[in-house]
Amino acid sequence: MSIKFDSVPENIRRPGTYTEVHDHRIPRPRAAQTLPPCWQATHEYHAMGPQQNADLVIPTYAQSGGDRFECVISGTSGSVEPKWPYIAGWQVIDGTVTWRKVRLG
Image (tube, rainbow, N blue to C red; front, top):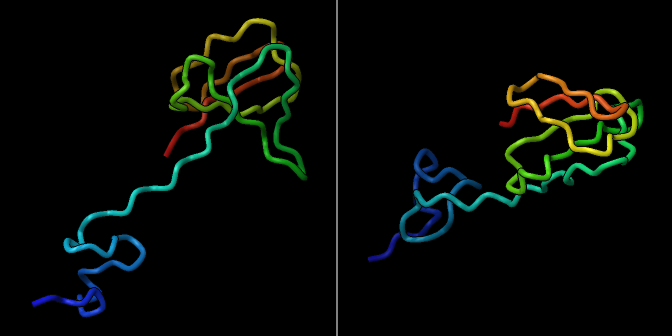
């Protein structure tokens, strides 16, 4: 005896969240996130403006994209990568750019 997917009650089958397999509780894989570019030396970065979003970067050591930094004051990055802060909301000056660590999630 087989049960059709459409016959599962709505409170059990959460539409758009589960795959159509024998066990309806298996979640779908999440879409891949697009990572911001890695920080670059002597590069021009822009803070949020009326018609643009602020530039985001990840440190060169964070290839997994765990840390993200938002440009809060436009300018040109320095020739040496800054020591990035560990705490969300903290800022670091890099050449004439100021970066703020962005909280994930």
